[in-house]
Image 1 (cartoon, helix red, strand yellow):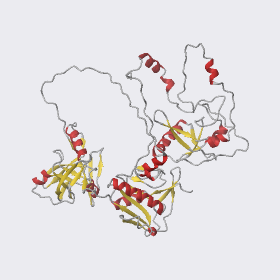
Image 2 (cartoon, helix red, strand yellow):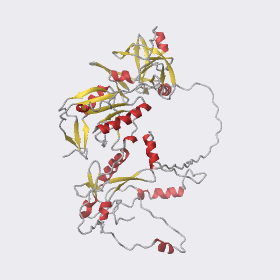
Image 3 (cartoon, one colour):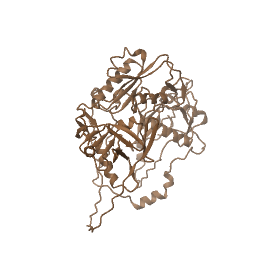
Image 4 (cartoon, helix red, strand yellow):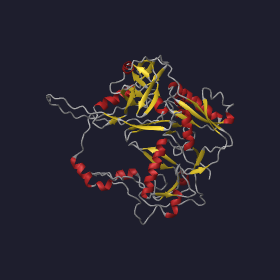
Length: 534
């Protein structure tokens, strides 16, 4: 069985993360289908220029030097915009000399010797296919995040302030990621902040210990909102967290907050193998063979103070929401390509709904609501296959027609999730089943008015060989002429016009379609077949 993609073994992935001492957050491998990715984020078979790499640690697995050049060129462009961006590249050892110029600024952190099994094959159904190790060594090259151009570190103090403001008024027992630590016999509240690059301490705590901070390589710290605060220096401390003593080097800031005067940043958390369990509200640290689990602190609620209050009458107003209409600006293809090359993002944008009315009603007519409630069973979801009827839908083919099979189209991550959801729903209802048919049609998605996606099967190949139904439908203008003199008009519609009629058993294999996960065929009349009702 030939694998559809190569999936990196989880053990190899963990070795790479340990070597770079950093979590890989984005899988940038060409052809990644999602089910074979070990990251939360991945980009399946899309143009490199559409990737948002800013602030990520990306894993690249190029198939050629040309692809490596394109990947690293775009990565370094993103890195100039966001110095926190980092990259990790898997490359055969024999190609180092040719790739030396491309790997400038990167360092080799790990080598897998020849014969080491690095991958499992994964077929289109997501089933692993064992592979052998390559006959050559494979190196891991890494470029760590760069310091900010203005010589500042990264701190998320605004997030800290927001968190503690809400923590101080939280109900008793509501725990936030603040732990108690020991510093020279003094008990401090330390915020566990994975968004901070380093540790930080308030100058008040340093002065209370009678210590003098040393000069720092940084002059200021950049906050999450872009603001700047001066760094007073750096100091080396022995911090007690539970039974463990850990060594830290926090930067000294003028002030933090009274509720937490120390910040445990990602550098220390990573160094001591921290794991945060929000469900049990604990922080676990590891030092050598020792480990400890420290509970988060609880903040008592602040009750109301005594006194008198007077209530003033309030005038009620009915507020109606209006959506402002914005006309999109059209650009040519060449200009759009040029904008994307410069870092712009290409998005599918639809004009918003324009309301002509100045007000909208906040409630429906009670009589209409009562009518809808009385017939709620009419609008229930289709539970499964339609009942057996005297007539099933048939797919007659022209004489000599051969089975049609077409390759899959590229799908976005959102569309892949939608494929899984809709296919799972159709399987549960019995409207589709796994197929071994020689027929195969690709799937695509069309946006609906409500913003959801409609899964469509591209049956154009099958429709081209299907005998068309030439039943004489009446002309629309003739039907309109017959309405002369009518006073009442009713509009009747179906919740859905498809999946309501069974397909003849002999024609079911002709409806087969292909997904990245399996091959299926329809038991009911689906969207896209010729001779289907429009």
